[in-house]
Image 1: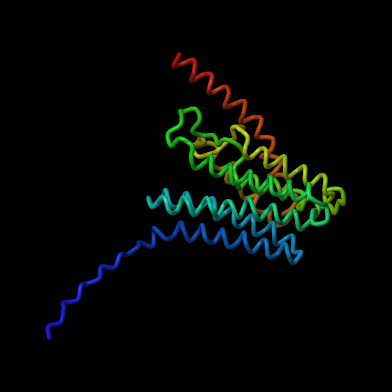
Image 2: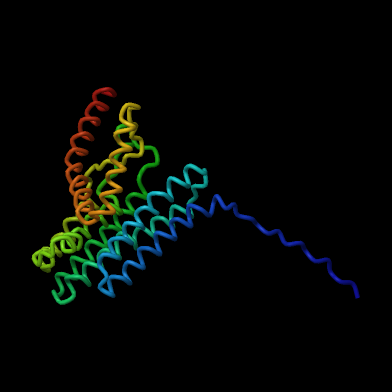
Length: 255
């Protein structure tokens, strides 16, 4: 009896360079989910630390993919799904567990509003033009998901630093969720920093500032967190003014 010749299987291989950005994304995803576990245990300092770690992974994965030239539709989809959970669902549920569980239906609506806003913001980001006008390339539309996550957790950080009961009141926490969610889905132009270039003379001062910031994170983490959030908040009207000015110059040049 003649045996049929066996077909050789062709095994596809994947480069470790392709895996690395996705490993970073998954690491951020796991950090975010673990933050939710910490929230259920009432370990609020751990929540802030883990969301911050997730933000670092989120900042690295895209840059790593571009540097290694391993960007893919799979990686982009995975990154968006991770951002939705880590900076949308997890912060909203953390605030709900922290201050809103017994506050009724409106508090839950505020929680949902923030989470849905982050989903819509990410969907808009994924569908934006790949080649926007030159003046718009250094701006996001609306507050990015990681920045929104940092902003929305601010009441917990204030409580960790100052133990103020007012920041845990349901009406203020609900209003804060809605405000940050509205900023995420707004058309507010915000600095992206992708194409920011520094003059050579500013390199050493910038490095020194980063060193001081690192020391501040170790010695006074909650105050540093608040300063960073305040600085970012103050940059929002500045980015809008700068965007309008650059758009007018662009329209004048093409007109």
